[in-house]
Image (tube, rainbow, N blue to C red; front, side):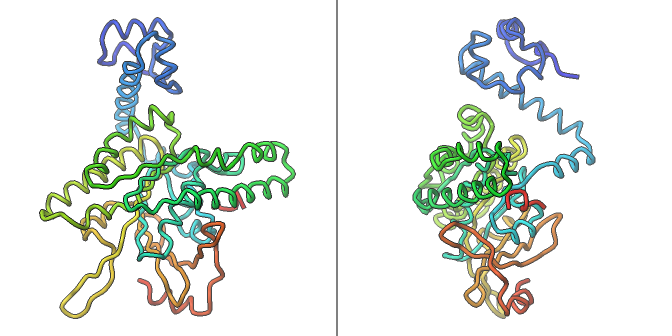
Length: 354
């Protein structure tokens, strides 16, 4: 049963205006934006935003209490992931980068972490008629590695692919959608933020829920932080405080991922871990951080070939597949002869747009 508006903890005057405008139950707010609610109920945009935040927050809490494992499983099976345009990586993950979860990309400089991040931002905009999630993306840049021209390049390749699919299937609806799927449309769907300090990163992540609700109408499908590790690897004398701050940020991001049904992708760097016997290269930020993400994927080089190694996942087996970075973006590469040796040393739906 839909909850009545009069039961929410808001002022009597505001309740009267909302009910008079036809917003008598929680279901009435489902597709409302702050602007439309403000006009309908003759209230300020600030009041409309506060009402929507309150309704959705309390509805989310009650939904969590009433969820069953069966309903969660059905929702996960029905939800499409964000493709990487590498069929092997997408199959390894199950269905691309999953929504409502945190995925961590680890790797040394130059292996393709930023290229993968840019590809995911573009792919998040692929229309539903082509099997995409047709949303928007948020790219948080801490290192200054974002290049708009590269995004445009990947966008053009993605558009050509969609046009090719529409032409091959001879589907008039897909052909019409492909015409409106332009580089400008993609670029306007990617929201860019530059964070030059840890304080700026903290402030931005705190403001993300309001930004998504107010600016994007909850249509964001991926948030990329490239890289999350950058501002936490230096200038932190108190490691306990650093761990607590990172943990709080991770909790905020997972809450956003679940409530908005979007993917969070955190890029991590590598560091050298020295033991008494030997030393090895491992993901940065320490052991406690390794438990934060749902999926962890290591991007690495082996004999001049890039590999993606899924080494942490709750529902997928550990696997390693080759990939390459081309002018068009992330793509598959045929496994070289030494692939079996590489795998020994390293601890469903992509067809919908193929």
